Length: 286
Image (cartoon, rainbow, N blue to C red; front, top):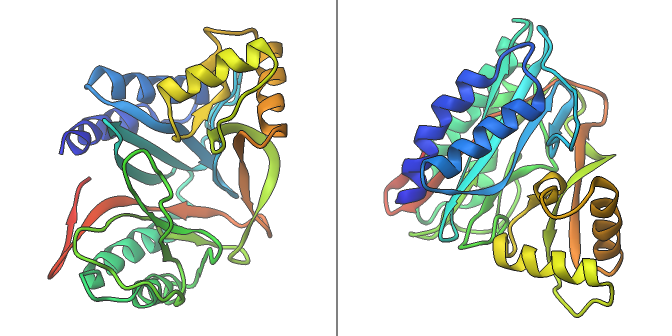
């Protein structure tokens, strides 16, 4: 699978550029450029989520945020080749105070993959994730989970939960991103106000010429995959991007991905790979 080959090469670059003092914009730019350099396209903007932020933070135009020496950071990136997606993530604990939390997320992923095969209920996979995390003294984030993947569809309808719930039975050939989230907090996330990521959900005729031009570009370049507002910087000024995106969101054409934060400000760790379900197990594509 070409996307898997690209993702494997990008992972090493992602780990190398994720270090204290690095700007979020530089990290995202390096990873996203490397995806293209290696022959793929970005399936979504690089997520750089620190501490109690679980997901959906990607830098905006002019973002001066830098990684701190005590941050725990989740790097979540996606690669696609002709719509076939690889989604993976890793967590780095710079301060050394949350190493056990990172271990819990990694162990939960390993235990999930160990039980996954055709005929297994996602409830059993969620139970394995939950047990791995709670047995180490942490909580799984119950309203986040892994997800099925289809060409050009990042969240294709089925879920791998972080707790023992769900009725879907895994089928041979299913493709899933499996991503346990572990936290020191309450085990739930809620939306924050910051939002830089959007995706096309309901294309239709629009009146404003600028909105029409951007919509045509999104359809051509990203289809239904998420994109960052900063990816439109070559087309429009920052103020025009905000106006057009707000117009398209207001009309229900775009879906917005607000940043997700742990409700009790707990630290969060994430571990993720993409797999294909087989008769007697899974094939890890990362």
